[in-house]
Image (cartoon, rainbow, N blue to C red; front, top):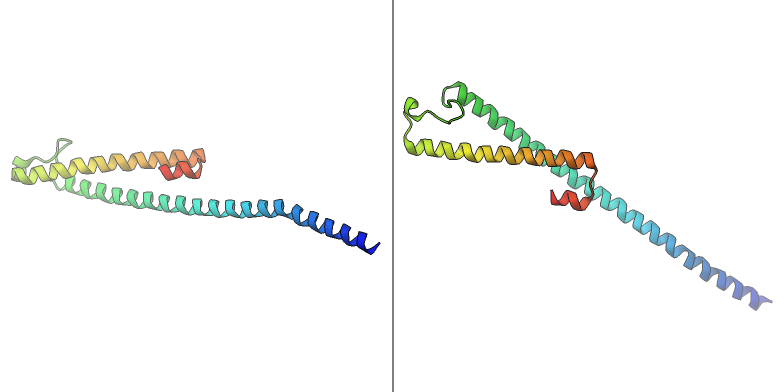
Length: 132
């Protein structure tokens, strides 16, 4: 009689241990998912901060450009009036190159901001956020 009860207890212990394995696996996966979500939020936060920093730099550059326009260094959308200001051709070419690079940078920042806004509104996954 004792032998039978030990056998039953042994069997139920084995069943109990096997029954906890799936629960442990679920708990482990849930913990991994929480950690992945936390890391994703941190990456997203860092990306948003980077975009905000870029936006602030853009605002600063735009303000500097506006001050330069008000001081008469910039005339219209055609760039500098080198003859009126007495700039040499080399200086004018350097400024033109800067303006072209700046315009490209502004375009790129605007594109990134639009992509981020779209991603935030679409609630996309980690993999897609990494590609941005």
